Length: 218
Image (cartoon, rainbow, N blue to C red; front, top):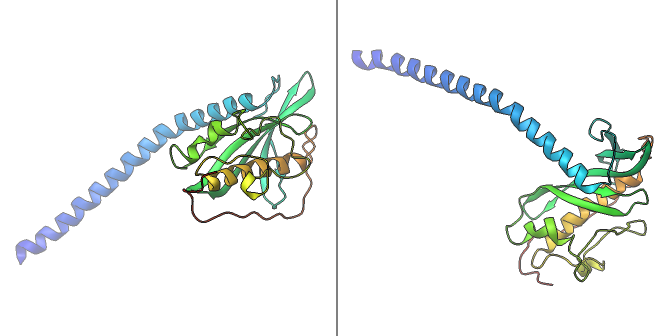
């Protein structure tokens, strides 16, 4: 018993030392890596803005502002300006309706509201299925592409829902979610004056999604 009593405090002391040491190491690693990670994300965002907008001579990242969407959310707008004149905007949008969670995209619009390009910033969709959205909706095949389309007459929808866009084969949920993110981006674009950054509210809108993906072949 005496040996047991003397051992317990030693064990507790050892565990405490181990926990404190591990915590200090993790904190040090986090402090060491957080800077490079932040720089990497900033560089990726800057590259994405350049990818989806015309050539500009301003700093869209530093001049970004928020605009309200039709569902009451707010999205970041990155204005592209050339020789003092707006040439387009990049809108950072997202949706939580993806098959595997949140999808984040950045969408470029010209001054007439037509889609210039897009880039998928983040997703966890099924490899070989939903993950195809990075290129699928840029492909000039049948009615897949959203490039050059205007949303002035209404939101983009997959053909299965009465729209004009062909969904990714066997990935209707991902396709709906992607288009939802595009629609939200346009909603924010439409609710702002790209030359001043002034925003305006818009009425609420609702979206719908299925509960299962796969087997929804076009």
